[in-house]
Structure formats: C-alpha cells, structure tokens
Image 1 (cartoon, protein in one colour):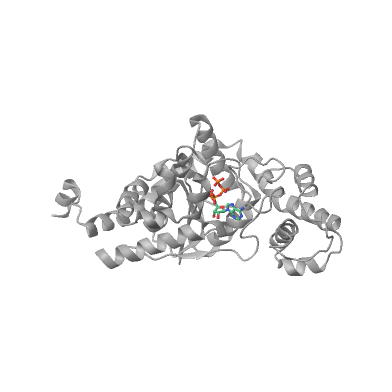
Image 2: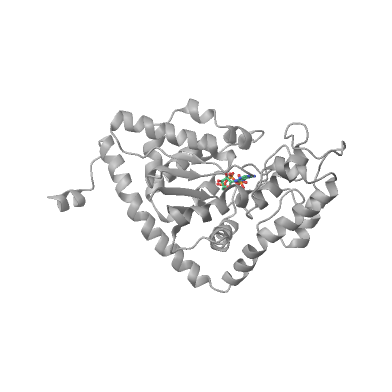
Length: 334
Ligand code: AQP
C-alpha cells in the first residue's frame, strides 16, 4: 500500500479552504493508502501565539480531523510535538538546505512582509515540513495548491541528501486536488481563505451553521458585468464561487457556469451546496465534544504508531551522516 502523510496547523478555526483543499481528500486517501495525518503544532509557533489558545486550537484540530471523517482504524492521527523525531530530523535537513532556497519561499515572503521582527522559525518552517514528510517515507502528500512550493523543497532536500549520503529518503509526490485546490477569501478574492487571517465575512468556517454560510455567500464580492463565466483573472470573485460549487458537487467550474445566467441564483446554490457539505461535519463534531477521553486515546495510539515509523527513518539519516548511535543501542547490537 502506498503511504501518504499530511498535516494541518492549529493556527485558528479550520476553514472551508482547509476542507476542500485538503481534509476531504485525506478522508478518501485513508481508504486505499497507509495514511498518516498530524496536527502540526510546532508550525504554529512560527508566529505570535498565546499558549492557552494554542492548547485549545490543537485539541480542536484533533476533534475536527475526526469530525471530517478520519477513522483511527484506517489511518494514524497524531500530534507532531508528540513525536520527537520531527525536530531531530529538522536539524539534519537544515544542514542540507540553503539560505537561498528558503528565501525564495513565497509563503515566507508573504508572512514576513511588513513585520518588524520575523522569527527564525518562520524562515525554516519549510524544512520542518520536509522533516514531517520524509520521516514517514511518504509516497504522496495531499496538499492544497498553496503548499506545492514547500513540497518541491521537501523533494529537493530528499534528493540532495540521498545523493550525498546514500539512499535514505523516499522522494514524495504532491497530490494536489483538481477542483478547489485554492479557495479564495469571499471578500478579497485575490488572496486565499486562511484560518489565521481575520476576515469575518470572507472566511467560511468548517463548523459554520447554514445561516452563516448563506449570509457570507450572499455578501461575497463579485463584479458588475453580470455575465456568468469562469475567468479567474478577470472575474476572481465569481470564479471562486464557481470553484466552490464545482468542488462541492464534483464538477468542473466551466460546467457549473453553463447552468447560470444570474449571480443571485448561483449564490443561492453555492450556499445550499456548502451547507449540505458541512452539515455532517458539524454534527459529528458536536457528538465528539462529549467524548474527550476517546480523543486522548486516539492521539496516544497515533503518537505510538507514528513513532514506530519515524524513529528508524531518523536513525538511518543520522547514521548516513556519520552521527554515532546511542551507546546503549550500540551495546544492544553486539
Ligand atoms: N484557501 C485554501 N484553499 C485550498 N487549500 C487550502 N489549504 C489551506 N488553505 C487553503 C490547505 O489546508 C492544508 C492545511 O494547511 P496548514 O494549516 O498547514 O497551513 P496553510 O496552508 O497556511 O493554511 P491556512 O489555513 O492558510 O493556515 P494559516 O492561516 O496558519 O497560514 C494544506 O494542505 C493547505 O494546502
């Protein structure tokens, strides 16, 4: 069975973008892949955090992963910081990456732009992401379009390490969805919908009730020419709505566009389709809130299963670089 690995940052309430671009594909992958999914809490430390909020967001993230339909009997769900090899491998890969390639990362440029101080962790974040992936020898990584560049870096680091020190890592492929791979903010369709960017009317939350979804879709920014056609460059707001309906109904946005002559009708159907899509997630999430001990068990078992795969990969990489094995391990081997 091929293996997939993906992660989500507990940096705020999950959005429709996270769901359409990533989470619902994670659910499909668990059926026919050996799937590992993690709450990447260490990534959340790259920007300003409040410890109380981070703790709550991390638990929320785990609840959401179960609510979208991930089944711990079919996949491994864990928290990144519970598996110490993530940070250990990061250092080995930081010594493989170059400043130049990290400087080219678009997300770093966007997130550091205009900031007075920028954490070193924000700069090296893509290396931590590479470690997340390479530790599990993942064949594929289901991500939204926004993460493609980071995935490319992970591939490049794996290739470079393998060439220099011998075959160690699997070189992963990106698995980017066809429809809704980049969900845009409903009020600012030129930027992606994001959980950590404040935009109350522009962001649809994973757990939003139908009324909120309808209100936000109705107020979504479009344009004034009134013609329904799919053109991302000239009509970004409308294109986003067409993408959303296409994503929710498994069609192409061009096909969806053919069914409409008025923006109002399209918005009505977008709101209905999204409400229906997210309703079962919200219901499962409410049920899970009454069973937190179950969530603890899932995370404990997930961390143990993840560690079993991550530890030998780390050991192999450390050995390839010439780091001495732990003396006790060396004695065990005698
Ligand atoms: N707008 C989006 N459209 C499609 N896919 C998206 N993803 C995120 N936003 C969109 C996908 O969700 C997964 C988890 O992402 P992440 O939490 O690791 O970080 P991110 O990509 O930076 O997502 P956010 O929501 O924008 O978080 P913040 O605000 O913390 O930066 C990824 O697979 C991503 O592609």
